[in-house]
Every structure is written in structure tokens, then in C-alpha cells.
Image (cartoon, rainbow, N blue to C red; front, side, top):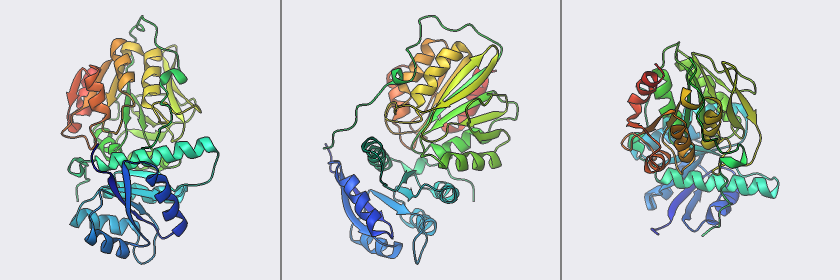
Length: 357
């Protein structure tokens, strides 16, 4: 094992600094190298020792987090994870942060049940580890010893696929999974889609509340309609549904109509929503009529699901290493032989449009 990941916590709340320090210090692979109450104190700490990852509050005195983030990215890029409260207003600001170069988002630690706290703390540590592995050069830019919780498989939400693939129908559906680095990477893909593209369902690992703002931002940039998925929403041509944070989203089919169900359930592959759950539901409901795409992200969520899609006759795509911010999920899918095509970010949309053609 290499040296621990050095993390600098920047937050104006002493209680949040203490809580985050406690959560991160519980993992032997992470070392909290320091805390700072504002960006000016953070700069002094960075000058003394360079962190591997910075967790950054959005709202702070003297200089807000977005301004500080932009200065970091311009002067000395360091992976930054934005830390926010669970508010709709804050989620809109975080979209600006992700566009400015933040690699991911975490929620500030809060009180809750023991199970909820374990899940929240695991998520915080995983995001920091993913950020430490992020290659900032691959982030798309808009022009201008801890014991982890048991990792459940998609069996927790759906039975394993039966042996026989579903018969082909006339309508295709595309399922996409992404995590660290995926917010801006998905923008690149979705901006390329024509208004009459096949229906798309997306799982992007992101906390609840933030997915609605994420969908609104993409909707303002794309030719296709992008919205946060709601239970019962139809999957239509020219429509992209983003799985809501903290809820699993499954593809369903009634006759020739595709729709989604949004439901609670345990974390699968340590995530909710889970890419594995979406991909397995595509096997059940679409079979060879589906296209599966796995993109940049930490861990292995979606790799087994993509393999199941391929076995059912679906066309499967993985993002290549050179354009992945974190080559974790695609790498695992490729290792399993789940990807029929490995393509760079800029080619993903064209590839699945050809497959759905």
C-alpha cells in the first residue's frame, strides 16, 4: 500500500471541519493534513504542504468556494471535492463548481440512523479516494484500515437474468452509467445527441437534490430534453432521464412502451442509484434491444451489469482510459470482457447512435 492520501479540509464551520476530519481519519488510507476556515488560510497551508485532495465548502467568508476553486484550477490544479448542505439553492451553485473543475460532490456529515451514517461516511471516503486518482487533464472543459460495509450486488434489487435474451423490437433504448468525472463528461456526450435520438436513461453517482439541478443544467445546453426521472416516466425518443440521487432507477417495459420505476432499496455495489441495477433492469426489459455505456468513475459499479447486457445481446461500450477522469468502472468492465467497443469520450455519442441506428 502506498502513502495515505493527504486531504485539506476547507470550511468555515468548526463543527463541519471536526466531523469531516473524524470521518476521513477513520480510513487508514487517508490522512487529514490540515484544516482551514477560509481560502486565505488554505493558501498558507498549501504553500507549506501540497494536498492530494481538497474538500471545499461553497459558502465562506472573505472568498466564496467557487472563486477559490477557479483560482486553484488556474494556478495549481488540485483535485477538489465540493462539500455542501442538502439544499436546492446550494445544488445550483454546485453545478457551477463542477463546471469550474470540481471532480465530485459530498454532503456535509449530519446526524441520522446508524445505517445512514455508515452509508454517508462510506460515500465521503470513497469520493475522496476517487478524487485522489482523478486525472484533471481529462476533465472536459466548456470552451471559454477501515472495514467497509458489505457490497451488495444487483441481486438485492432484481433477480439474475434468465438464460434466454428478449426478442428484438423496433425501438432501442440507451442506458449510461458514470461516476467521478461524469458530470462534465455526460455533458459532452449529451450535447452531441440529435433531437430524435433513442431514449436514454442515465445513472450518475450524485447525492439527492443535486440531480435535479444537474438535469436542468443539461437540459439548457442540449437539443434533447433532459429531466430528473420520476416514477412512471416514459422513455421516449429525444428524452434523457437522469436517475434521482439516493433512489434506484430501473428500466421497465409494457408492450412496446419503455418507462422507468424509481424506488428505494439498499445500496448496490455501494451506490444508490446503482449502475448495476439500471443495467440489469435493461436486460430484463430490453434485452438485445438495449445499448449499454459505462463511463468514467471510481470502483466497479456497472461492470457486471454491462457484462449481463452483453450476454443478453445488447451492444456495449466503455470509455477509454485516455479520456476517463478516473479509469475505474470502464477498466473493470473491459477486464470482464463486457465492452464490445472501447472509445474516447468524444466518440461515445456517435458510437451508440450507430448501434441504435
